[in-house]
Image 1: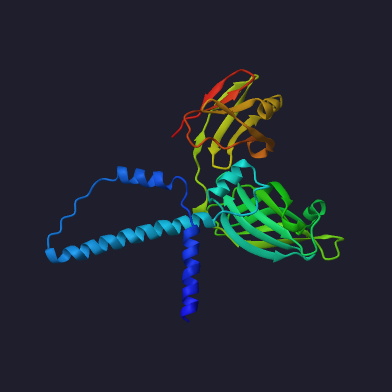
Image 2: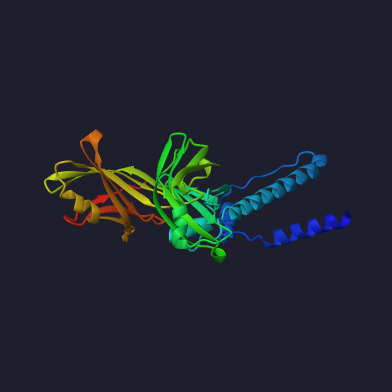
Length: 328
């Protein structure tokens, strides 16, 4: 019995010694200590002094233990094995611990194992990390035909898939993938991934689904959410409705009048987002018919804005008009 206890204690000691604090923790602690208002403690009764000191020591110990627990949770949320398929933004957010671990598994009809490793979520998009594996190996070119994600469903949620990247994992027996979807409802507590998969004989496909927990309180915060303004262009108007900036991307939405399709080219290639004087990369633009408003809606998706933000503008390249985005 003593040997078992000693072994457990040794393992725990080794685990704690391997834990390192985030690089900026010391600076954060120094800032918190320097800005905290000083408090005076008066021990009125001599007999109670030791008790109060003991209580203070206990409080400090609990505070340190709480910080240690949060540090462990921080590192526990890092999703491993996706550095090859994640872009710079998602890789950075993953290293910062913004992932929510899942570990949900479902066996597909052809014998492959689908593992939902984790997710990230903010107001602009929902991101799912998965592993597809098979003991007999997977050929990357054929592996994706086994599993085709279509959407996410849940309470007030019908999120369509938007993009996907994948690459080989270890020993060619698995692939790692990242799927992006439309944003999900912050009121959802459970979500269901729907997908198409090959049947056992491989001559047709069937629909599958897997349900997993979602913690909306762990979603990433929104940096900017502002309404914008209407801009005159080519004898008509472009209504820039809103800009929403989150850690994963920046989205600009608006509408166009139905009678002026010449504005499509200007929207797709002529709207620059500028932050702190630097142009932000545009990744995708979409224009759709809006039957309810008798016109068109557009969505522009850019890189995320810098963390230290001083100024944001939208610039129309054709006429040079600049729209200042207020920072609140």
